[in-house]
Length: 115
Length: 125
Image (cartoon, rainbow over all chains, first blue to last red; front, side, top):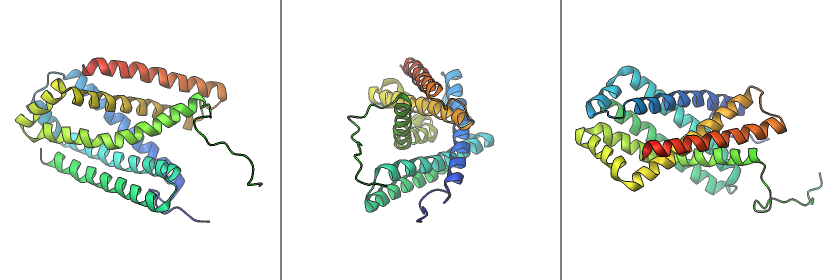
């Protein structure tokens, strides 16, 4: 038997659990953001800036960002292993997805801590 | 097992049951969201950069037709992906897994998503 070496947690069960836990984090963040934008439709720069200067918001956003990275990797891994059969091409596409995920994480941290 | 059995994997000739359609849409919207994050992160970065950047972002969303279309597309994908995900969580708990209830849940997911997407369109425009 060949075991998978590209999955997130090297175990389907672990990936399954990570996918669910991160999904709940992302659900909470989405509801918060949509609610915030709905109830503050006439917001100015100072209000927007002070929201992201708040430590709790930075923690929540970083949590959502890291959850997105893990969640997207597991999802894209499932999709690419299902539809891209040639190993070389799949490796290239998965590497590209991994690189973009890494860029999102670093870029996101940079945005959050330069506010 | 006899490997010579006839297999039909031609998607154009297979009638997809409703839960299969909700499932493929869940995957498609997931992929769209992953790449759409590029646009949204750019918008977040611009809006938090400076007062001028913030105003530029607001102008982009209020006046740019393409930016609004992308936003509506991404918000729609997000809402659908979110609702289909909630359906998955309910199924993980052991509900809505029968043929009848599964089809009902798929219908409900599509219907609620359609309403949510319309409302999002009204909100964005």
